[in-house]
Image (cartoon, rainbow, N blue to C red; front, side):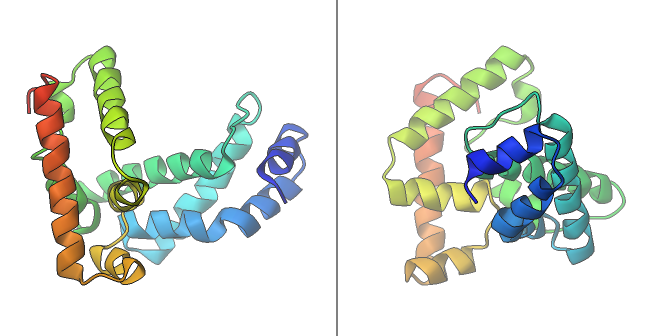
Length: 185
């Protein structure tokens, strides 16, 4: 079923929307949650919460890309759950991803105002737009979807070391770009 048809089911408050969403995007959502949480039960709960959030927000929302919409929801819910569990104990999943980016993206505390955060988002979008499709995919799959370097390397036909070096060059490129644009790191 096409995204527009699934969104229309949500708008009609038809419970088939959840079944069709799970059929089409269940694996995608589970993978994002699992990459962040590294716990199957927590991941399943986040995916279930994602479907509930989609149900609660459509209408009024009418996403153009259901995949991106669900990906954002499951990622945000997973990070929130990770932060809550991290208050009790430390995990390596997201902490590793965030530590890799800390040298090239300022901490949230340094972007206090919403306008500054939006400006940073726009700069990162602009930088990503200047990268090749392959570089964008590698960067987003690692730092948005939280996929492992090992999995990315395997799918790209690279050694994990080569994939890690590419990611390192991308992070360095982002850091230099942001510095050139006047962002204090």
